[in-house]
Length: 267
Image 1: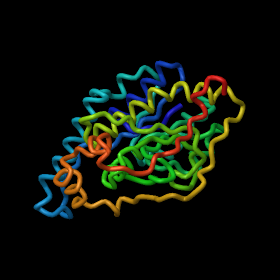
Image 2 (image 1 turned 90 degrees about the vertical axis):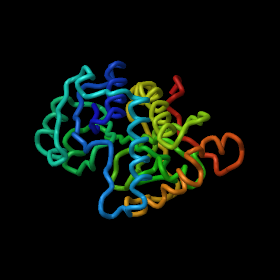
Image 3 (image 1 turned 180 degrees about the vertical axis):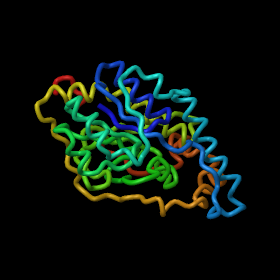
Image 4 (image 1 turned 120 degrees about the vertical axis):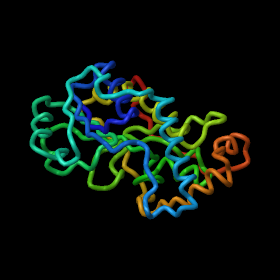
């Protein structure tokens, strides 16, 4: 069972799970358009960079995941607005299907009533490596801090702690020469989705799969931390070639220790 957004990357994940026979139903939250527009808080001198950044994000998304839509996924679905995410119709949809695991990705926060609507375990797909990159824009900050190798995806228990629940699986970034910031993010999501059916199959083979408790609080990145001025570093100082600098050894940084127990078929 899954609760996700409706962008191509969310549809890509749902389709892969449906093809693997691991999706009993899908709740799809209709999200805002993928391309952002500069608001009044964006200085006029940064409009061009702002538009470039989000145009490249959309281009990378469509190169990686195509123009997938929910209608392209062959599974029973419920399409909702965010206002209905934690409502009675969603609770009924969950209860009727009695899943063992409900996987969330790219939707808004699930409240306690939703988490208790079914005895299922709730696991979340977070686009960042916890605990180092919890919160939002966590595929942006590793490259901004010149450690693109810290880009990743974390599958963790859904709790009240932001991206802080026990970790079941992590996928690190495949560093491909020539990839920009958004290409790197999309390649990482694709690598995660490729591994996910095996991870879930092995986890579901256990009565009560256990995750790895996050040893430190790490850092929670908030939306208020990001400013359009940060784009100057990515595009003007480094021409969006930070992955190449890492591959060439011109920048270095910490190497992530990933949690990956459920890729072992003997689990």
